[in-house]
Length: 326
Ligand SMILES: [Zn+2]
Image (cartoon, rainbow, N blue to C red; front, side):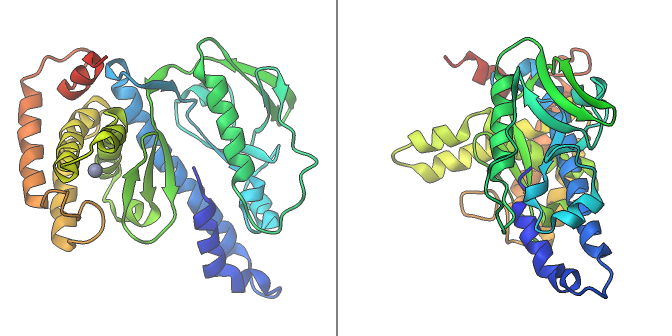
């Protein structure tokens, strides 16, 4: 989860408090913790969506079900250390309940010391005044590399009882990563690999079912390689974008259902959000009017009801079609 933007916001909001010695510093600590809570909420909803349809996705990867953070990404490292436990500069900020990492015995605060036989080099870099997520991004890339193959994923971790290697095998799930974009504007997006949801939108949704509706739509763009399709399109781009939006809406209903979320939440979200504002996400001319989207969700829920169920899950027609593309 890229948290850097949020932290600049935190500094803007609480900087005055933090810099005045006589004032309590707790608001910053609370803001840091609030960020991690949002990261975990998004990571959890994303994990369930990715796992729920895992067997139907052509694009898969292994998700350990953890949220990592770096001491260096926080503007005030002393306060970050008050807010959290860091057993290494890059540590586990949060764990998805019942996810692979927690089941392997990892705990919040455990620090990452290395992967697959090589250690992370934490020394030697110049101390930067500004908060940065550069090192965290680098570690995340290393983790992704180590998880790319099959077989056991070996993490060298520093725990409360010392260093140990924890080997575990996160199952393959639909390929998507998730990050909280900390801005008050209600917005979400997908870049082909990652799903981005703003903190403003996370605060706006009524519950996790509605958050799942937003995340499932964006994830659908990634799972169906929409970005690549749009980039390949030379003319008539608007029509292609519009069709990708409709596909994302339709697939989102199946992804939600397969993960145990209530697909009706897509309708409740769009009715409330659509009435409240015509700005923000999906308001461009390439997107449907919210009334049309609600109608489409209803159609798709009905269509899904007559589909064959396997272990409580259904193969989404759009993913079946995507699997058949060579
Ligand atoms: Zn979209």
